[in-house]
Image 1: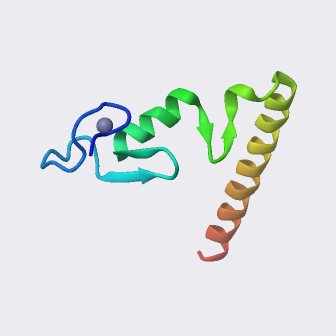
Image 2: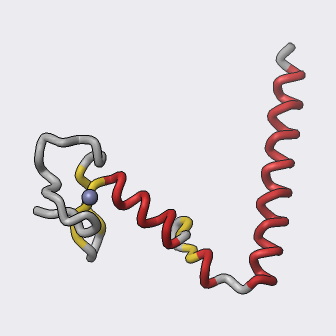
Length: 83
Ligand SMILES: [Zn+2]
């Protein structure tokens, strides 16, 4: 069984490329190789970042920023209440 990305044997003793994982309908791979592939293709969950229009990307960025700000604020408030 070979990794679909690096073509090296998946089930050998070398764990430097991560654990073996199976990708549904695609094949098997090292976890590290699969992760690198995702970063390269810029996929988040089922979202292909490169396929989003620039306008939508700006909107997504604002949504993400707002969500992060909200959560940080919420966490800070909770931390203050515990003091
Ligand atoms: Zn691999």
